[in-house]
Amino acid sequence: MDRIVVLSGAGLSAESGLGTFRDMGGIWTRYDLSEVATPEGFAADPAKVHDFYNARRANMAGAAPNAAHDALARLSGRADVTLVTQNIDDLLERAGASGVIHMHGELSRALCHACRARWDAPASMAPGDPCPACAAPATRPDVVWFGEVPYHMERIEAALADADLFVSIGTSGQVYPAAGFVEMARLSGARTLELNLEASGGRFDEVREGPATEVVPTWVA
Ligand code: BV8
Image (cartoon, rainbow, N blue to C red):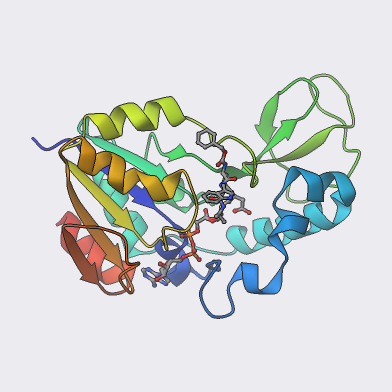
């Protein structure tokens, strides 16, 4: 049985109404990422950063998984499949997927800068909220900002080294280290497939263009 690594990006959740980043009207065309998705931005204006993530958390709560999430949920839990996502939403879990690796963290989780405790984030966070574990007013969304080390890299790299097939879904391949995964998979002998609205221009053996709700269920079936 093929050992499969799937990497998803914002295009997986686009048809659920969650914004992408670099498409027309994308999040990074409306916000300066250095102000809302870096540790420096958070240090400079934590209220602005919390507002940014509180709005996305509300958007996520009002969204529903789509047919692509449902299809990946059917794949998940299989011993030979590793689901990696750059997305910080919980739509794969709400579709029933298990063992999803959120390399950029999760919007539904909070983190304490002081003691590194993690817990389910409230709907709205604000500067100075006390940590439930150590009471320090050092809480933040549990997401990986630019300049921070992504989560679970060892586990992801081990899966890529062992993969027979690497499938990239709905990502522009602009952000590292995720953008380098296709090359890592190729070097370990895996076949590579891109499922995307439009080809990202990355080096894939095969590209299937179309909306995720069409090309992902067709591939999973
Ligand atoms: C790190 C969480 C060291 C927060 C995010 C110069 C060269 C190379 C690298 C760098 C460099 N300068 C700086 C870096 C490093 C930097 C980086 O890559 N910068 C880029 C901008 C050049 N990376 C980092 O800082 C990372 N950390 O490098 O640490 C290290 C490295 C390795 C090992 C140890 C240490 C940390 C990066 C994480 C940043 N956090 N998100 C949040 O979400 O707010 S990243 C951000 O971009 C998004 O969150 C998203 O996860 C990610 C990727 O975006 P996409 O998902 O691809 O979305 P995008 O809009 O770009 O594309 C949408 C796609 O969907 C398109 O392809 C479109 O066609 C498709 N689509 C649209 N609709 C549909 C669809 N597909 C299907 N169906 C549809 N309906």
